[in-house]
Structure formats: C-alpha cells, structure tokens
View (cartoon, one colour):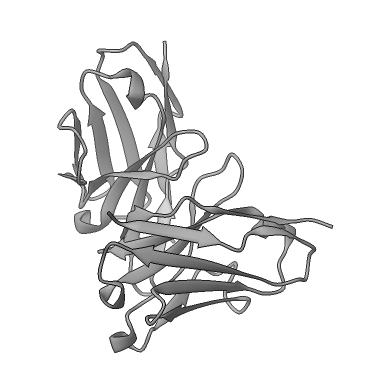
Length: 119
Length: 110
C-alpha cells in the first residue's frame, strides 16, 4: 500500500521558518518525482513545487509566490522529501500535501500538514 | 499562465442522476496532462481521471472523462451518495513547469 505521511506543520509567526517532512512507503522512492500542493481554507489546491529524481540531479521547480523562499530536497536513504519554508507570510497559511507526481498529475497524496502563519 | 474555469460552481442533483462538469482552459491543453480529482471535507483530493479519459486505480466506471483542446468534461453516471463532493480539474504544462487547478464544482444533494 502506498503511503505518504507528512509531519512538521504548526503555528509560526510571519518571517519565521518551518520544515515539513514527507515519508513515503509502498513504492520505489528513488524513481519518483514528488510535488507539494497546498490548499488554503476554502480555496482550490495550488501547486507549490516539485523535485525530480536524484538521477535527474534532483532538479526543482517552484511556483512564483514561493520561489526564492521555499526549498525542496530529498533523502533517498530515508525515503523522505522535505519542504523548507523560509520567510513565511500570512498568505502561506494552508494545508500542505505531499504527492507523488506521475506525468504531470498527483498520483498519490498524503493526509496533509496544516501550516498557520499568524502574529 | 493557463487559467482553468469550471462550470457550474454548484450542481444540485438527486442520487441516480447524471452529473456533467465542465472545465474550460484559457489556452489549449495537452490532453495527456489534464486530470480530475474529487475532494470531500477534511480529506485530501482523490485522483479520479488522468490524461483526460483514463480512470485512476479503483475508480468505478460511472466516472468518465472526455475533451480536447480547451474544453474538458467529467461525467458521473448514476450518482451515488458518496459522489457528493467537490471536483477539481488540473492541468500541467512545461516551460516553465507549473500546475493549475480549476476553482472546483460542488456536487450536492438536491
């Protein structure tokens, strides 16, 4: 059974940092691309960014609102993907989902991690 | 940037009826990269359809997708009680890579 389990969410103040982790199981981690998707309360999902395989230099791409503030990395030895979020803004408040990407779609989803940015 | 507009915003139907949901793109979308998801309150989106018309694993055949270019449709035949939810379309494009989601269509019980 495929599982993606996020952790690390919480309440932070504007300007602070937070790191989310996503532990994957049930499939070949090293072969997968991972995408983070977020969803603010009552809003549509929003693409945050993605990371390719290590054999593809773990290349990353980001949505414009988070570029230069967010970093995605992966540790294949731990089957874990990370989302490092820096200089957080109130508009970053959302549930963050870790997904496995397959041909431009989210094939599997985690349960989500709530990130609240508020003073 | 591609914009996806879904219609209607809300669809009120009775169990057993057919639901037809539309997703219109502001420019042509590669049908390989058009997907649909179902979301219920407090849950992650659930993949339904990928590459316009292919059902994801475990999705019943009352769900079907079609379309090309800028117009795509999700059809749900014989609505079941568990089908009342919000549905999102999503596209992927490269150069630069990005995903876009529609604003969603809520299917609720009439």
